[in-house]
Every structure is written in C-alpha cells, then in structure tokens.
Length: 262
Image 1 (cartoon, rainbow, N blue to C red):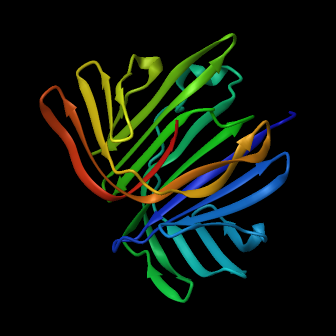
Image 2 (cartoon, rainbow, N blue to C red; image 1 turned 90 degrees about the vertical axis):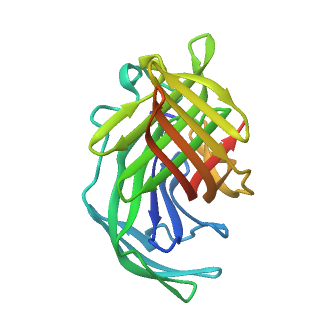
C-alpha cells in the first residue's frame, strides 16, 4: 500500500512518578524510534537501540544527547475486549486506532542520563495507529494507575465527501470495560483546553486539564513523518466517571498524557 504508516506507543510510569513513552513506527521513510519524558523529546538515530520483545523492552541508547540502558518488563496486559474502531474497522480510514493494553504492571529498571529509575510495581499502557495520516485536528488523553486505564481520542474524521467528529473513549476498571464512542452513541458534550465532557446514556466522563507545554514529536502525513505534533507525558489532570450520580471512578493524576492538536 502506498503512503502507509504503522506505529505503537508504549507508556511507562514508575511508582515515584517518572514518566516515559516510546513510539516505535514505520512509514514510507522507513523505521523510526522516538522517546519522550516529562522534560523533553528525542528522535533516535539508531532505531535498534530500543528492542521491543513480547513482554519486555530493552534499552541500549547511547546518543549525543541521550543515554539509556536497562530493561523494563511488562506484566499481564489488559487489552480491549473488542477492536477499538468497532464497526469502522471494516472501512479504509485515514487513521485507524488500536489499544493493546489499557494498563499493566511493570518491573525492571533503567539508567537514563545517569539516573536510575526503578519500575517495580509501576504501570504501563500500549496503543497503536495505522493508515495514511494522523487526523488534521484531534485531542488525545491517557491516564493509568495500578488498577485502571482511561484513554480518550476526539478527532476530525474524513469519511467520503464529509467530515465528522469521531469519539473513542475507553475506561477499564475493576474488571469492567466501558465505552463512550461515536459508534455506540457516545457524544462530546464539551471540549475546551481546560475541560472535556463526554456522555453515553447513563454514563458521563468529565476531565479537567492543565495546559501543557508539550514537546515535539514526528507524526505521519500522507505516509511520511513530516508533521510535527506536541505531547506531554506528565500533565496534571483530574477526571470523574459517573453512572448518573453514582461515582464509578474519580482520580487526580499528575502524570497524564495529553495531545491537543486543534
């Protein structure tokens, strides 16, 4: 297929609040590997310096501005019960989304820029995207903990001759999976830089956001990695997920991940 990209996003969070993400991707330009912390982002010249195996990630990065060595092991993954795109998976979309693990435990440790980070009893998240281009406008949010995962994507979606606002919202908590998506009548009630409100039937999700600085990452456009987006892996947020007035899950999370490209 011409003008195609595929990428997987791995988030790692230690118990003491060290946040790290890597983006392993392939596009018309070939393989790429990016890394982001709460201080800055990096595009690696040696894409093999991070090796991703079935249940562990090995680091041997030795570049001019970045040194990382060690290993992070992944615990039991919590994937979605059904594909994230729902019925839209049958169509050839500009960008299709997958979630491989809403949350999972971590172990192991790394030495990054001379600092040892212990990921024992930490937690992680894995998702992926594929297609031709990232949406022209979108919002992406992720929050994870030892017993829950929450991720939301809102995007402008081209579909034939029209464009519509698409919503993917997933919460995994206490063994249950909740979906607030366009294809099951989930709606975006409000979206500003400070607040996002979603509803689906009796369920509502309200997210309060801080405005992050964000760090530059390469993103796909027409199969190449020519677009620049900004992400922060440690944004202070809070959210409340309700069944009518009953609170199912409410958290303050200083280590949320956020992209706002509107």
